[in-house]
Image 1 (tube, rainbow, N blue to C red):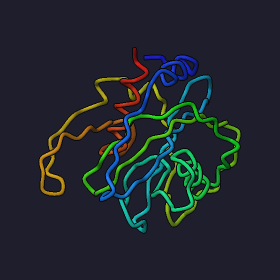
Image 2: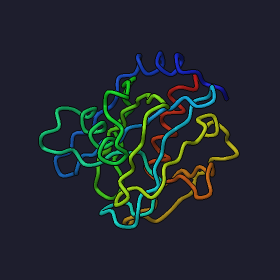
Image 3: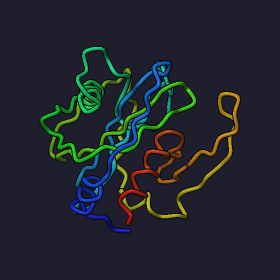
Length: 187
């Protein structure tokens, strides 16, 4: 499925994100980043190192825990993007926000959607990021590359999405956010 940038902006403009208020959970924000390469949109993902505190070795969006001084979810997502990849907030256009999502590790994640100019320089923090992935966005709409499995996580059986779009599957919270995003813009 080919989805253009203007269509995505329109779909997100009419969405009022659902926020989860739970003071017992830690709050984090991620930047769901679209990058235009060779006339098609790509999602920017990272493969985390085995040295980070949470979600070691997993494929994720740039992001992290909300700091006390962060002014908004957008501020957190942009700060984390700059810390992890050296991409300044001035290179990102925020185009929307998706619904909050609570994950089994005790975090509530707020996904912020942005567009990054492909011509920017990336200075990856090697202690947090092993690899940067730019995966064609259209792959995430292909049902043959998506599967749903039931897994035992943190003592409960959970439905978990997997996307087989790279040499390792994109799964868990990242896949859930991608599924929410593709559902939102597919109509």
